[in-house]
Image 1 (cartoon, rainbow, N blue to C red):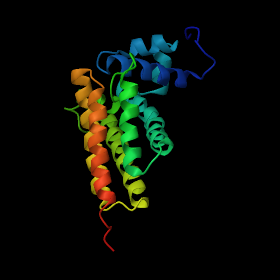
Image 2 (image 1 turned 120 degrees about the vertical axis):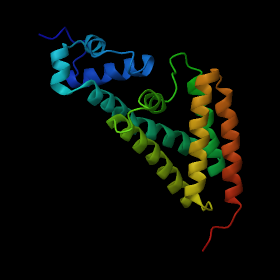
Image 3 (image 1 turned 90 degrees about the vertical axis):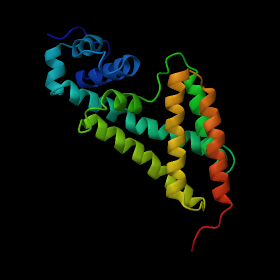
Image 4 (image 1 turned 180 degrees about the horizontal axis):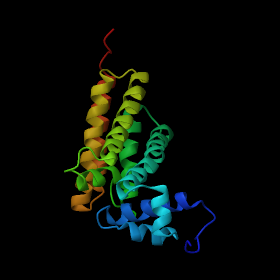
Length: 199
């Protein structure tokens, strides 16, 4: 029999919520399946009824973060005033603001990739790669709408700056790196706005 649930959510949803909290806060290797089950208020048997293995649960953890993260970046971009260069910088400014929160632990996708670096075929690695590619494609599409020359290349450069900022902030615990990366991204995009697109 399951432990008393903390909410009225279905068991599977509670397990994913618990995995999200624990994996993001402590890392996937540091958190056992038993800890996830206990936090979710279910038995380990119930957890394994919904997820065949811890690997499947890790993959679902990242899947559950995919769309919310992409929508948040889109919201930051769309709500910022100015042109595409200003809007790109705003993403980095908001990222720096998020990094100043005591519960911030960096990019869950990058942290998971680092923990699974020796397992390139792991389903979570594929989900992380797809997430990063989706953000890059979305950014390139927005740049194309704004008439930016070489939108795919510029989007890739911005992604490199963003993931570099994520990594550097984890090393130094200093959100100012994200703001500096944002200024660099703004310069790149601003220069591209001034270049006529090839016909």
